[in-house]
Structure formats: structure tokens, C-alpha cells
Length: 374
Image (cartoon, rainbow, N blue to C red; front, side):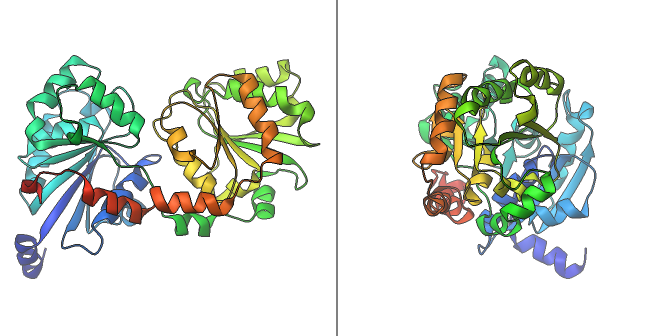
């Protein structure tokens, strides 16, 4: 570091963002929070607890500085004392105003390794169901604020921490860079060509790991129920891989629809190909938010989802919702899609109003953060 950079580090105020890792959607989560401070007096330093150093991750983090602690998952399962020491060193290296920590382990390390106010962002249900975590959060409540990525996650935390003021457990929705997502999505014909889907088929799309939480079994059953009345040559295309692949293929065969169900496997940067779908269906039974719904909506693709978790908050007013696990209900919604002209303009308006970087920045400024955190 140069002398000028050292001087700048002593006078410049910073925000410290602490992430468990950058796998899957979490690199974009880091981006989402870093851009909150664009055009403000603050610089952002993003720290990854796990994960090898990567130039691509540095670029994707959209931060002024990126640090990789390079711990393995096994190394951070226990007391995490090494991580606490590393964090303490980093926290002392700049004039940090606050820390934004994603998921419980980084929150734990940040609170033990510094005296900074911590905004803890939670991306899943049940993070405070353990009594030990409740006690920990209560002990540090004076300098901890909790954010859920949906009202459903927020309400789960409020139920686990009933003595907390509601204003200290709030919602800040996940979001996307709408223009960037729309720019990288391929046109329908090119997307279908890449995925090997017929140009003249009517395609129900699904994206997610093949896991019980995603409940693709209900998806296949609902599609099979609706298939006789769907447009000719209709297909169900499932993008993703996982331990249920064999059983799901067996289910499709048992229901007599194996020729109409395509398992596409893991597709890198899958959101580029969402315009290949005539409808996007999400049947998850435990979805804290549903980023794929935002990406489908950005492509103007009609969406159908279960009434579970945060998904209904995403599609409210512009998508179709069915009761979790209700095969007949899903079939009915799939049959409605060809007759209901979903408005891509209405989806775009909803994205911009609730799930854009600009909307998040405005919401972030209104959160009830104590004045001492400013």
C-alpha cells in the first residue's frame, strides 16, 4: 500500500461486508449490498470467509477492496477462533462505520471480532430456532440489526426473537441488476437452440437442484395431469442436477410422460436461457425468496409458483400461485397460462419498484438504523 493510500485509509470511511462464501447466488448478494453505497462517501471492503482468491469474484463483488480469508468449510465449523483473529485485524485496518454480515457464521465472527455495529442478513429460515443462537443474538442485541431477504424470513426471525423490537428485524428484498440480466438473456430461438429444445414446443421451465426442497415431484405430477389439455408438443424442461435425478426420471416414466420431460442438467449461467420457456414454474416447499423468479420476470416469462416462503411476495399481482404440494392446483394454473396474457411490462414495473438496486438503496436508507451507526 502506498503512503497516499495509507493516508486515504486513515481518513476515508468504509463499510465492511463479510460473506461466508461466493458460491451460487452469494456472489451476487455481495454485489447487491456493495452497490448500496455507490455515489456515497463510503467505500466498501468485502471479505469472504471461505473460497479461493479469484479475479472473477473480485470483479463481481463490485467493491473497493476484496479480501479472501481462504478457510475451508471444515475449518469454520468449530469455534472459528482463527477467523475471529483475522476479522479483528481487518476491522482495525480501516475506519469502518459498520459491518454487513451475510448468514450466521459471519455474523458470529463479526460480533466477536470487532466492536462494530453489525447488520446481519439472513437468506434462510430457521437461523434462530436454536436456543444457543437466540442467546447469542440477545447478548449482542444493542449492536446487531437483522435483515431478512423476504417478509417470510423476517417473520421467522421475529417469532424466534420475540423480545426484539420489530424495527430491529426488518426486510430488504433480494434484487437484480435488471438491465444487466435483460441484456445477457438470449432471444427465444437462440436459447432453445442452446438447450436443445424444439422451436415449436410449448415449454414449462424449472431451474433448481434436484432436491426434496424444490419438490420437482409435484412439478412432474402437475405437468402430467395438465399435459392432455396443454398445447400440442408441450414439454417440461428441468434445468439442474442433484441426488433425486434417478427417482424423478422414474416418476416421469411411471406417469407415462418421460418423452415430454427433459432433464437438462446443470447449465452454466442458466438465466441466460430463460426466454426458452413459455412459463416458469417453481414448486419449492421451502423457498426463502426465489431469485430465479426475478430472472424469469426480467425475461418477460410468465411465472407460476407455490404459496410457500417468500415466492408469493415476489410474484404478487403478476404471477400465478398454487397451494404447496397441490398437484391439481398446479395443473390448473399451467392450463391457465396459455389463456392469460401475462404482461411483461407489468412484471418489469414490479421489478423496478421492489426488486431493483435503486429500490433497495431507497429502502436501505429508511431502515431504522441507530444514529450511532451513521
